[in-house]
Length: 244
View 1 (cartoon, rainbow, N blue to C red):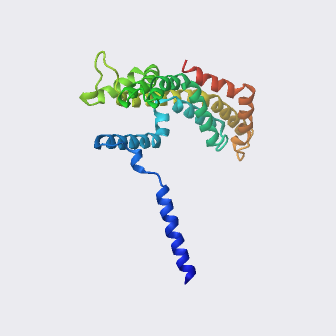
View 2: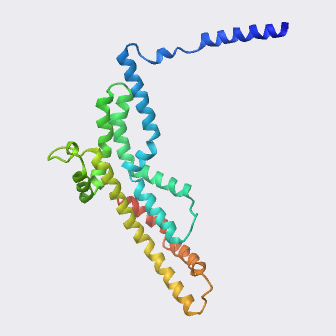
View 3: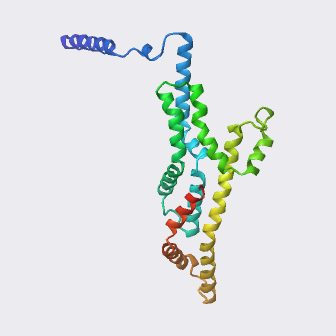
């Protein structure tokens, strides 16, 4: 019984000490109804941006073109899981960071860093953060795709002479432009491998080896062909130079 009483007293004292040392959460939110609401909105906006960061990376950067072209390469070689998805995505990410480095740097210097230094408000920093991405997308987007979304847009965001293109028009137009270019490059990548498949299939059929799958012979030939022409160097160089 004494042990139970001592244990209860110990728990009460420990709890009181922990509560006394706990940080005051009110200190995280400035005084005043307006300031509190603004800080809460900032935290919600920050969590939202972090949750959709992968989607933003795909929407406004060169990642889409890279991953589509690399996927076509793997399909053209006839390899189902080599290179693995993790390898292709990592390669596309690092290529994206390489191509987008000037854009990221300018966005950081003009908008993010002043915002973190409290020398600029959120309203002032946001246009400066997105402006480098806007210029990058405008340089890569097709006029036909931009016109498509401009015609489909509601009247309040339609293109106007001398006005900036609204991001709600620019981002989807840029995405389908990137998909188109990715498929164009994928077609050029897949064509040599298709020719090898057709030649091997014709030879095996003429030799009467109908039970032998052509892929058994064409797969090592395609891999050797890709190695001999230094395919990785050519492909990655062409993809990066397509943004110059």
